Image (cartoon, rainbow, N blue to C red):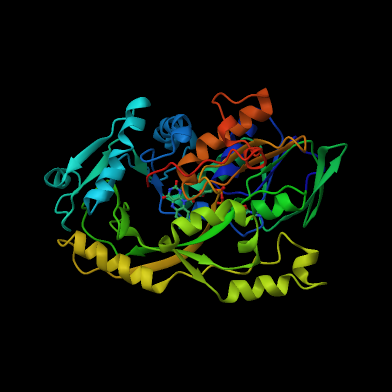
Length: 429
Ligand SMILES: Cc1cc2nc3c(=O)[nH]c(=O)nc-3n(C[C@H](O)[C@H](O)[C@H](O)COP(=O)(O)OP(=O)(O)OC[C@H]3O[C@@H](n4cnc5c(N)ncnc54)[C@H](O)[C@@H]3O)c2cc1C
């Protein structure tokens, strides 16, 4: 374990590894800490959609620059990440949904992103043989998809190749401070002196921030995903329908996820910062399914005086793996076979679940925290941070090395929560 570093990055997901890669490329001494056995958590478990379509306008400059990076990423990282620029298609089953998609066209126009509304009869050109009685859809041909595990690993390897070091199964236990600034970190395997810590800890970022007295609003949503058995090639386009979202992988299998209500496992954390989340939960209550079970029990036990969680608040739940929702797996497969009737009967090769970290306004939190010099947040990607990972990493590296990122990130500042400047979610997907 190093004794000193210019920057310690907490979390080896795509955001942490991309940050380390861009920093190391510029000569910074970077150490990445990862509490799990492999780089990334959500970053290995996501659908793999790399989408500009439907985004909050604030995110557009970032995600369009990200798209440019993605197009050259295989070459830049020297790795096969199964990148396919096959477009993104959001399907509408009724006029209300179609009208909602249409509200996003001015955003696409403002930022010069090629995006079209398609009528039902035009859908077949994008997804041959698509069935399902659609009213239409929104198509962005420049979007793409990639393999989440290969991409996260490729960023980790590229960071190492440029001199960064990565410690797996080595959680951050605490951040040391002196005179209102970061002075080092305490890890499971020793201490490191550093003036800069990047918190890229995904769903655990709020917990980490809390150890420093910082109130970062964050909710967990459990996302279930499955991979089918292989099938003949149908489409290169990533498709997001109300009943199923899917993309076909290089081996012909599909990554699938069901639409419908979002699973929220109730824990003690669900009660925190309710003022930020309650209005949205209440307005969209049909969109959430609340589960009371093992995670709640574990969080109640964790709150007991003298518990392991009290002593080690950032690692006590390392063994708690989120469980996929079997009903969602069944529904998504049935819906895939309904909308692509030419497919042979498919089976499920594997299924998994991951916790998504969601901010109240569904946009990330990026930048240095005013209360604590040298503490930089890169988190809160709210279910769409795989696409943003490369640009988030580059901008954070610029912030640290140049004092200013090349794109404006003030809209993502941490202080927006304290200022009461948290807007309503503006993404349409
Ligand atoms: C089911 C699902 C589907 C998704 N689909 C898409 C999609 O199609 N497109 C898209 O753009 N986005 C998608 N997302 C969101 C996307 O995966 C995330 O926004 C993105 O991966 C976030 O990257 P990250 O590096 O911040 O987080 P993570 O990959 O979660 O990495 C954070 C890391 O920090 C580590 N960590 C936490 N605490 C500590 C500690 N104390 N010490 C050391 N390490 C620590 C964790 O172990 C973890 O590995 C999806 C997410 C899920 C779960």
